[in-house]
Length: 476
Image 1 (tube, rainbow, N blue to C red):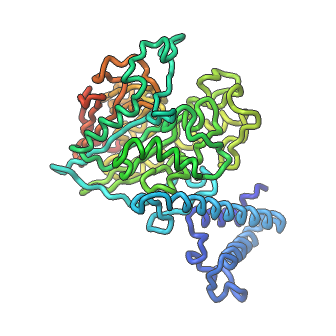
Image 2: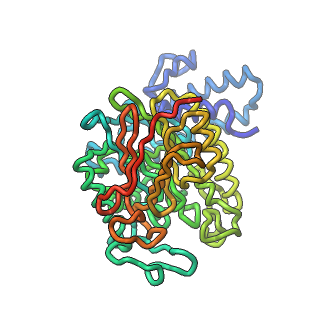
Image 3: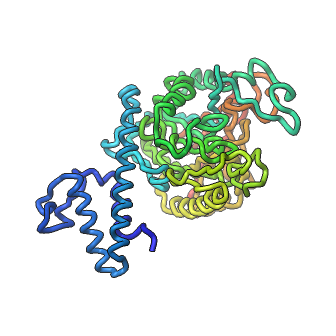
């Protein structure tokens, strides 16, 4: 029998929810005629209570041996120790931030830093956020992806533009744009923010090029190097916009691009350092409360579409044997344990997420339902069309392709609008930019009310490249 028995299940649930803090556990309800019977509030008493309750349940079910129970409790204790270690590391990072930006794990809706990056998969993020309506009851939200240039001077990571056309040498490279694209996009975002005052940002991933946060996935959930990376590439570039929530998902380059074992757990961990970096898990929900209506965001991980057999397409394969180091493993973080299990891990997770998302959409009571994910419009089109026509999904926000695309009322998606906002400037664009008004770099500005959403694609010079209106779909 697996160690995840009744005892471990109780312990994991309590630790994951933050309830394993001694002052949150009513130990006297679990045990009698022992040191917990008076409701003592020590950690030891709390663990004893877990042991007692697990024992009572296992006796009732008659399914767990004493040895299995001891092993399960040992696992739960180890998990608690790892959680405490992660929380301590995150607290150290919080102290380096301005007070307004610090995540507070003990506040309403707060959670302790997770022991593993997958601990909170599927949760609803409940940290407090404030949305202020603009003129005429309209709220602006920005959307961006593929944006983080980690090279010195925020130099844009040079990609290819077709077979044999490597940037910057042989790709019709445009100096003054291609080499500093993140900076140019950030400039126009800050300029437009002066008038539209966005209340939060939708981030579709590939936040750090080439290989995500340059740490290994088995290390600390959050570290000084992670905080420095965020400081240089995120808050240092976007300034005041990072004092607002960024609802974020992982992209394939956040895992490592051509490998899976870089610092994606650290990006999740940073969500428990900085209140405004909202990525508590690989997939989760976040409801934003606007004046008179709600918007529920569903964040999912579609990076399975870059998870292939180890020998296949090494330049576009998270699971590549050629580029993953020998013995690569993210098992300590809850991720793939090897190159050989990598593809299965991603695809089984994606299958689980699809069932989760269908159920969440079907039960959502929000006025608007929006999915945020990395892989672009057209990926798994039949599934997303079904979510739109049967469950009322209103809008799909994506990236991965390095340009700006507006799929207004797409027939492929059953009439649903989808955007690709992969022109954030972390990597060179799909095609040569034809000046500052090109669709190769930029971001989206969504103007939202209860009745409709205006969708505008914004170029480097602030020009509106394309626009449409989205209306609530409603469930069938």
